[in-house]
Image (tube, rainbow, N blue to C red):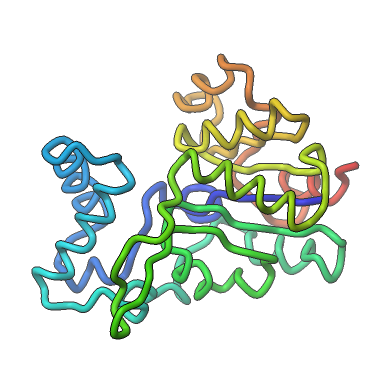
Length: 232
């Protein structure tokens, strides 16, 4: 069995990446996202492209190099949702035969520096080519469409059927991934802090592409923990 997770909002409490480097620039992730939306409108970029452009501009304005050190600053201290580490320790491949992957629009190197990486079988995220130890050209932009391609790649390299895949996400940016997995016989799982009032969940459920919805807790005896542990 293969379980694939979005990262921000799914494994962390925050719907937006909480990059430590933003603090050095005197902003927070909400301000960064708002600037990204402005750039998107002004330069006719996708939301993902605009957010990365905003990120790069903040670093440039503060004379901070756009490299692995700045991108990954604070990744080892990133806050995770309730029980996430316990969940991965108990249900990792070496103990259960279940493989776990993260597919995220965030920076791939950042996820690889978090505490959960030791329990993951792979990470797919936004990547750049390096030039003189600085991130240069955008190599992979992990947008909604590319998330589906990442899922296809995971299925291929593991030589499994998509029916053996479960995808976890928390919002509308997971729509394409939910639809692809659900429509091809896998299981789509929406996680939420407040299922009764989650607008994104209502929209996605109305499209018939959500198989399960669980409370955003991963610890032992949680809905998510028991679902994966006992899944057949």
